[in-house]
Length: 179
Image (cartoon, rainbow, N blue to C red; front, side, top):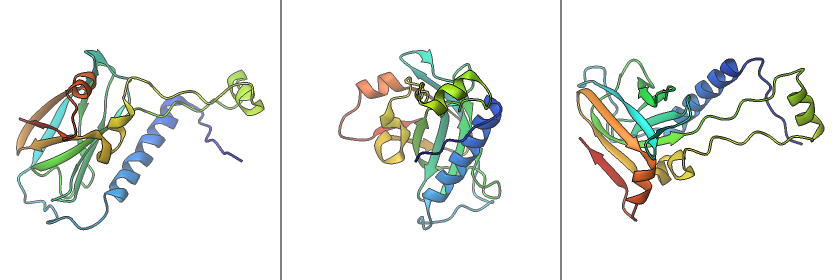
């Protein structure tokens, strides 16, 4: 039997899902990099845009950067204009400079709101679970399949990703965007 979470509002459910996603991502990053980042390491700020074929992607799309060498994670959400700004996974180490893998994941669709016709139809089997946004190709939803790698330098960094263009240029080698 499947169980589905029901949220009272879309923003509360989305916010909870995104916090849970970030926590799981940080935990999944695991232990042991070559060198843990320290608060004294040169710090970076990271922002940019995510588009698909030049069009903005769904708001609340998650963007996660992971640096294996420093065991550092940073994440953010895309706004309605396609822009994002990352926050460090651990405030004590910030966002250190280094080579990061990148993944982009569409937000989960909102659960039906308790007491609505949509909820009743869903619970009675008359309606299917809403589909996730289709503007984020599934390939970009995990570090091991995204193929995206960037070099984050100390100071301000701006990365603009057009997912359709990245897919067209895809080969057997990871996509490397170095600025």
